[in-house]
Length: 221
Length: 74
Image (tube, rainbow over all chains, first blue to last red; front, side):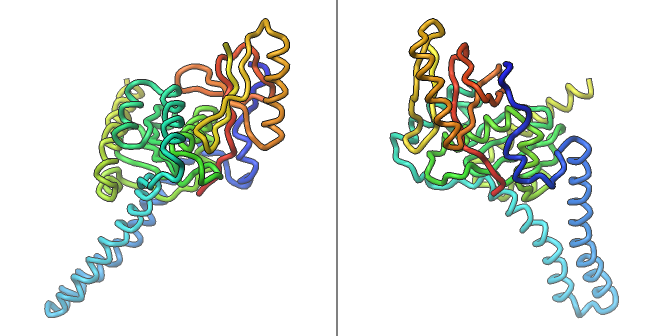
């Protein structure tokens, strides 16, 4: 189409951010892993050393271990919050219409998953996306790692289907730009985020994980 | 029949409908499209499964043109 525009115009608002690509995603993943290790290892080490030096200090050791466990959990909780189900603000009729339009944009499988979980599954170049009304989760090829992004349309009164459709159209027009505009809330293991998700949403992450494993097999093949 | 719709508080609103051989309807759709651009909306067209394109002019041959608002990091 001759009148098509290159890239998301919203990128201008975050012009200082480098465009997300495979290399940058891998670097981000490594940084998050290193940061998590930097938080966890000192607490584990301190607890172990303390117990070795003075076994009576067991309660302090346990507190130290608890810190090592809680900190990554808090990060994962922040990640899971990007697709936390929220009560719709729009009326029932508007919600119904918006979901109808969204249904026209996605396939049968994605429609069925959206009806069950409130999230839309979208296969793309960087991995498999789960798009919700106020955020998106990127499950990387292989299905082990997820990136959770806060991203939304700037109108809180829109019905949920429209909010997802806004994000989906932006993602489909420029995936790398979409990942650049969105704010990264968490990058880490899929299982860690899954535990913090609402039970109704977990099947969407499972489906995305399976799709991402298939992507990995295709890329290896 | 092609349609120009805007995603809004009602779910969506149909702004214009046209066929390529109806010049009057096309002109009305182009005017409606430009008015939405002036309001800060972006025009989007699906270009196959999993793909969409932002357009600055109304693609007269498209079946469905959707106006969306800007997104941002939350």
